[in-house]
Image 1 (tube, rainbow, N blue to C red):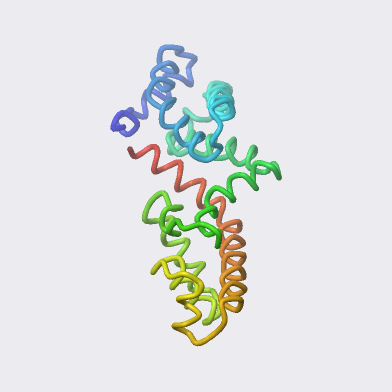
Image 2 (cartoon, one colour):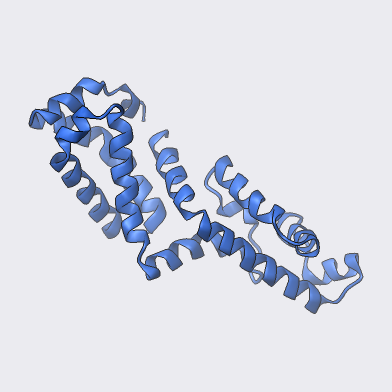
Length: 198
């Protein structure tokens, strides 16, 4: 969406003066990537639409501040981030989102952990979480989720029992979920910018 970056800063100053045509131009350029980012996080078309509408209401209400800002585009990205975050703070929404990103870590599923990541930056977050695991959990997690071995195969490879493998894998998954939860604000920013840069 090259249009996002092609918008001149002057158009934000025009909007700040109450120019509704300038506001409409900003809306036309940003609506789709903002909606895509909100949808990617919430997985709800209704909620994503609600967030986008809230964002543009705030952009209009704060138009003078945006026009005076050193980085107007950064300012409106922050408005989007804050609106998504305010919905994210709901315990139910937070659980849904974190479950979405952690779903492929479930020991009962065959999906690769890599499938949960939207881009290379998010892969880095996952690898950071893996690196923080105790040695045994790290080995078992990599064998199960990266190499795709079954619990029985891992047990044979390591000379331990399938139950030990299962317990270590479950503990690893729990730790990674916790790390992702602590990284959720970073994840929101990553999703926003991956959608903007499409």
